[in-house]
Figure 1 (cartoon, rainbow, N blue to C red):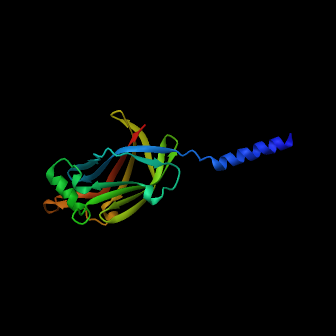
Figure 2: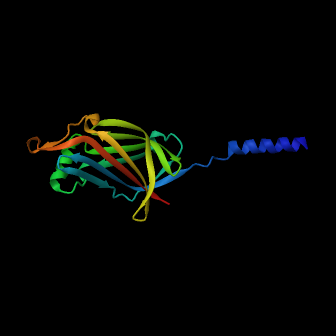
Figure 3: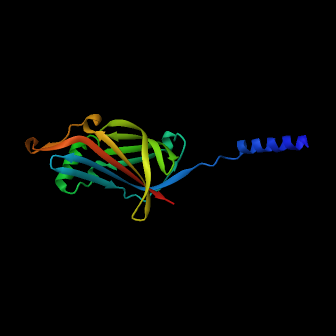
Length: 186
C-alpha cells in the first residue's frame, strides 16, 4: 500500500513540473486615449481612437518580456481636440516636430478583484515616465468590454511648458488627465 501512495505522490509532483501552467490573459482589440486639461475658459478634451484591427494578447500576473509587451504608438497629429486650432496647439504643446508619437507600454498587468492593476511606461515628448500600480476598471461601453484607467500628470513633470494663448489671457492648468481605454475581445 505504501509504494502505491509514494507512486501517486511522485506522479502528482511530476505532472505539475511537466504540464504547462495555465496562463491567464486578455486579448486587446483596440484602444482609446483621451487627454483633458483645465483652462481659464473651461476644459479641453483631446482624443485618439486606434483604427487598427490588429489584436494583441496580454499575459496577466507576470512580468512581460520587453519584446512581448503591448506597445501603443499614438500619432500626436491624430488627436482630435474638437477644432483645427486646438488640434494644432495640442500637437505643438507636445512638441510634435521632434516627437511625433506618444507611446504607452504595458509592463505588467494583474487581475485584482473585479479590476486590474499594472505598471506602464508612458513616453511623452521624448520623456519616459514609469507609472506604477495603475488601476484599471472593467466597464462596458457601447456593448464593448473595456479596461479603463485615469492617470494624472503635470506638464512640468513631462518637462513641457503649459500653453498660453492671446497674450496670456487664455491659460492651461498644469494638470493633465490621461484616460487609457483598452478594448477587450472575449
